[in-house]
Length: 243
Ligand code: UDP
Ligand code: MG
Image 1 (cartoon, rainbow, N blue to C red):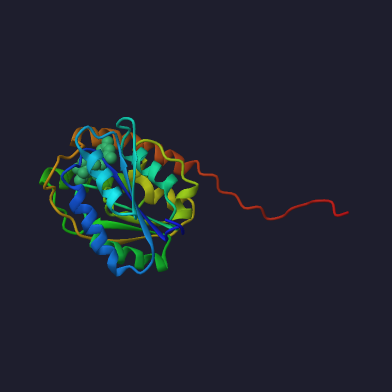
Image 2 (cartoon, rainbow, N blue to C red):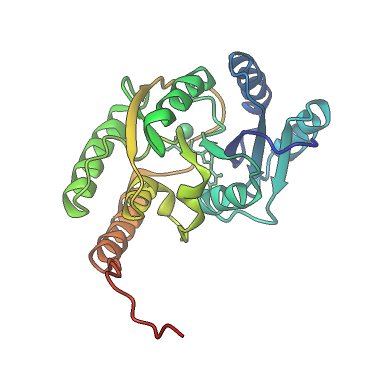
């Protein structure tokens, strides 16, 4: 690719071999209505199934697709981080690689960037087990209460960001669940749009309720602390000797 693309779509991949080809076709199809240039970056987070081979084939076939492969499984936040650092677009779109999201929603997210700096999807009809749905409602409630936030569905991966929003955000493991809060702290405007959500057909969920709740609660306390200690100063005068 000679010229930098306008949009970069970043997708973490961990053992998603049966989802990748259909996903790539879905993205190609959805992006036909978008006139600006784009790239797709799959970040293989140390998959142990055939994901790497499938990604290689996709990237050989389509010049707009790239793949980054981790040595070992490092977690979803690390995969996002690698994608962000390697993205060439002015806008970054994030999505899961498990076919639970609809690439057809991307154009509506991009449109909302006209009036904001970042757009977060929320799953209007979430297609997960009731246990997952209820735990997510509780988790969102607790998260919003403790971090003085109002984001409906932080677990929804489908998001779009102007690149500069992410430039000053230092990511730590688990922080992908707090992108909107971290960005708002930097003074950027975040809006929300409803998006589609489908049941997982192939592969398996990488998170159990227990480990997600415990880890993200610890992360929540870290974000709450960061928010309370955020440096917020304005220089109102400068004195220098004028020669
Ligand atoms: N994922 C990843 N590394 C991990 C765990 C998950 O890259 O250690 C990817 C996974 O392949 C998928 C996305 O992150 O593309 C979300 O994972 P999953 O679908 O298992 O989460 P759920 O939808 O169950 O919350
Ligand atoms: Mg999923």
